[in-house]
Image (cartoon, rainbow, N blue to C red; front, top):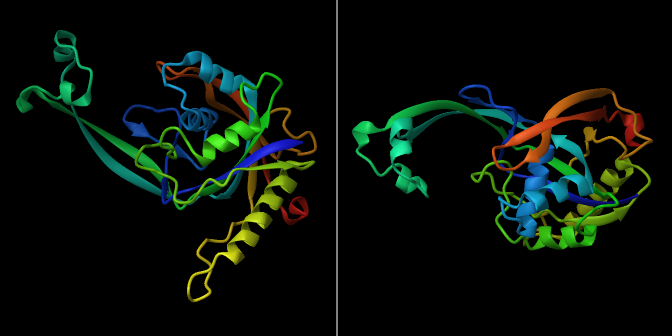
Length: 254
């Protein structure tokens, strides 16, 4: 099967889960809506272009090869906001406009936000019949993105090039394994003055999360419902989808 593969690594990443109250959690790897947003930013899709986001959602299947879930970092967060009554009385186009009022009238919202430290994963993209862009076009956009890419939050930029590659492999495990082997071969060629590699070695995939119909040969160990299927970008409306997960034992990795 034809696939586009790329890597996501960063000191900090935050893959939002459904928010409850003042708590903002994070998964170990990206949600479907996060991947659509990442491709949209690379292509230059505006946030209010609902049709373009829907085309990305319906045009591709995604699989995530988790290399490391990283460590949890929990941040105590405070935000200044005006009261609702003040927001109704005056229009605000920017955050600066929103806070342009006496400080004594501002309120404070407390929240807890989670991040993953040192997480790393590989992303596989498979085009459906209605794909709005070729996999080559997506690869080109990821190499030279139109807008800045980040891993869940603007404070989480990638720490390494995404290195998008087009591959044709019969299964997802073989595709992820070939990607890591090729990247590690490139790493061995890039050394500093002391002949030490300047790139970190690509870790093997320990878990694969994939969508229905992506790899019929891969059997799921767990199937769960995840609320990350984009319905409308405006208002952050998300729906349920089934996600399958397989754990990469030594036998499966061969």
